Amino acid sequence: MPKLEEKPRIFLEEFRLKNAPEDYGMADEKWSFKKFVKKFRIVIVRMNSEEMEFDLIGIQPAFANAFRRLMLSEVPSMAIEKVMIKNNTSIIQDEVLAHRLGLIPLKADPRLFEYRPEDATEGTEFNTLEFSLKVKCTNNKSQPKDSYRAEDLYENHSVYSSQIKWQPLGNQASIHKESDIGPVHGKILISKMRPGHELDLHLVAIKGIGKDHAKFSPVATASYRLLPDVTLTREVRGSEASLLQSCFSPGVINLDSEGRAYVQDARYDTCSRNVYRYDEIKDAVILSRIRDHFIFNVESVGAMPPEVIFVEAVKILKNKCKSFLDELNKFC
Amino acid sequence: MKISELPGDEDSGPTCRTYVFQNESHTLGNALKCIINRYEDVDFCGYTVPHPAEAKMLFRIQTKETPALDILKRGLKDLEKVCDHTIDVFEKEVKEFNKGYNLFY
Image (cartoon, rainbow over all chains, first blue to last red; front, side, top):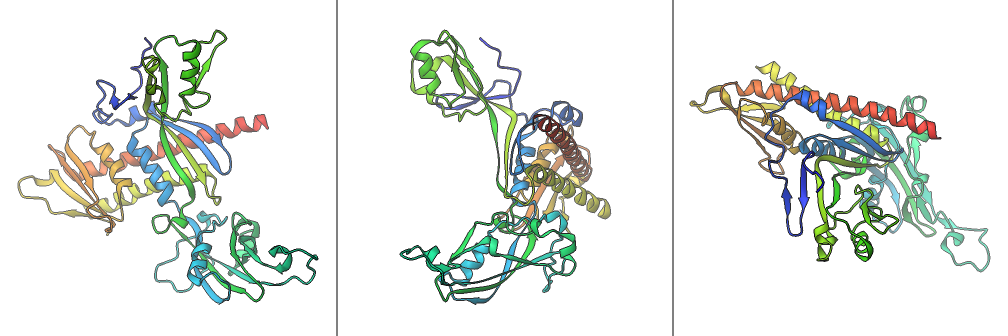
């Protein structure tokens, strides 16, 4: 039988989750920073400008969860907060329209802006971005004959996010490039109109955090899961092997040239525990998860690349500690 | 004032204290508790967010001898060190990853 004891595990049994014996949830050991440094590792598995997958190994669940929570609700980003409606004769109501506009992700890098003070009535070039959206729907004079499609009959019948125009404040035009400011995606449908309908809006975007409103969250998702592990305890071959294979996600179990099943890569297993439905093979596997191996998935909304979002999150936690320490040192 | 101290009772002295963190929640509370709970001298450490609509977190420390305030300071310092180390390792790994990426493309 293979050895399973080196890593802290939680076993996925048929009807229960079982901790490894002698494992009291990693809460018993004394805190030592040196030990943490020795055990802690990060492995980046996948990374591009929008999405990344990385492993935090040898870390407490409390820290992993703190980083996740920080990415979701305390890392800032820019979003439209106020919409001045000068004219809206379209079907969509003012408040619904304003809400839709608020949810449009903006490319502007929040690190280059300040928070707007709560009592401020006017924004400055350092804490505010202003946009305008002015669209009027008309009949298309050069419409092709016999076409009844709305996009042929009318001009501007769909309003897209690409029609939002940036209005630089003060010196902004020389600091930021126009291509770095506007909506992340140009093809977000805002409203549909018919001839005579008109939108004339003034949009004000500020910096905020996800705690205040989800539109300020810089990530589409930030989540973690524990690394799954599958161990075979005996030889499985023939039809049993293919049955075993079908119980797991594709790529987890593979068959060798003699039809014997082996574990190829358990990382992307869903841990469905389907094997336990079949009496003939349920004794052949041990399913478990590694309790200090966190697989993070961070998907950026588009303003900042995911690796920057993670670093920002950790920095926020660090600054929290720092400011509380300063304050404690002051009053005691 | 972002942090304040609730008065302790007369029997326990400075070793038992509850601190009130304004505008904090489980994010800081749980991470800090996780560290402080593992200290040698600590009898009890726990935190609570008394009401979801109130943005505050109560943090309780009970020790045998060390003043609770020292423990709290040490906890915050250790958490800060953990963050520093995480950033260092992460940035190093990102650099390594990008190096390898450039080799392929």
